[in-house]
Length: 348
Image 1 (cartoon, rainbow, N blue to C red):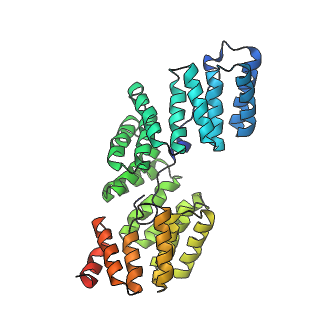
Image 2 (spheres, rainbow, N blue to C red):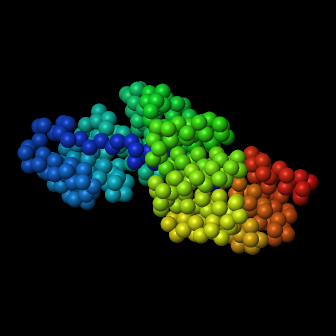
Image 3 (cartoon, one colour):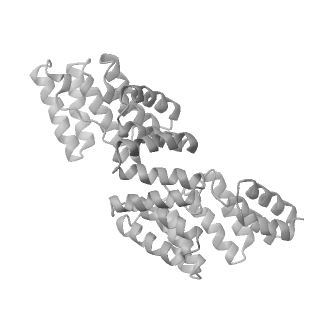
């Protein structure tokens, strides 16, 4: 996503309820099939996904046309991380019960988890016609549009979700991210504050609000917010990365480096952390190391804000003014005001 550090959407798959039917259309099943189905539900509620799958397997074996068993096994597969099997199960549930909207919703979530965003949208578009008053459906579809970096299309869905459910914390967090990406910073700040007002345990909202204060260079307030986010989620690599950046901006360069390295250790593919590692090397005038890490960040995470500005700084430090100016022009074209002054100084 395109942010000063690392702003983040709420993982709406964790927040949106994935249906676990209990009896539903199961009343016509024989007692043995229902017994395995119910045992699967019990294990699911305990968080024993593998054991739940084992029981659902038995239910499906006894009745291969059992939509609820396919649906619930699909949920277990989502929790287990096997999204392709989840998609297959939800598709089977729909094959035997074409109007099984819960399974359609769940398949949309599985498609999104699997990175099949267009398929997820297709399912959610169908559901939006059936459930015109479901905040959950619009929250989920807004998230898919945001995942596609189409923030303009995400906005109406989040607005609709909030209209339908004015106290839906996740919708405010995610709309704030969209507003931030569209550079409506005052609106983003308002959304994040509203989310915290509704739920003071909302770590994403603290992290995201911190980015607003970083833009204002109010590092004291940003640090306090990030500390709250980290207290709620101590091992979240994005928060560690962000607070590391704040520490570097306030002169605590080596302390900041420690947090950024912890972030990378937790998530080795965190492109944002490599960007900030590049910033560390810029601050310590190790321009070759800076360039390596900044380019790695660019490969790992598309759309990292200010990446061209910082790459330009690295090239400039290495004495390559031509490449520096190319990067700064790209940065300016993306709306980064930071590049304007260096372009005037070095490239005119």
